[in-house]
Amino acid sequence: MKPANGKPGTSMENKTGNWRSERPEVDQSKCIKCGQCQLNCPDGCIFVTEKGAEPNYDYCKGCGICANVCPVKCIKMVPEEK
Image 1 (tube, one colour):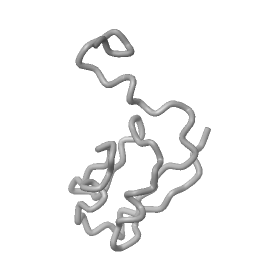
Image 2: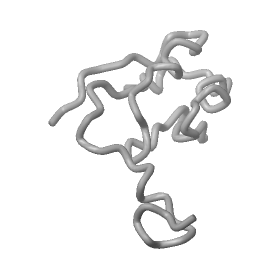
Image 3: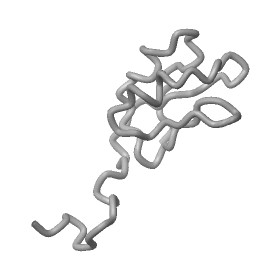
Image 4: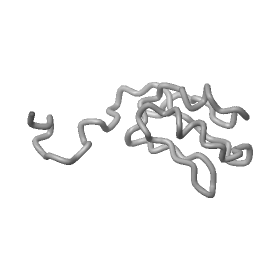
């Protein structure tokens, strides 16, 4: 099966378009780096670094699972800026 973009080995077809209505915003001062957001993200686009949770907005679909599973509620969903 040929990829949608015609380039094997790329994930360009998985990039978020302009349809996302919300995105996660992380309050790094509250993040305890537990990794629950990273473990539960269905698109694998939020990572825990030394700074805390960092979403990759290129691939984030805005589902809000990361915000729902955060035990300290440091992630909130905010309207997408167009």
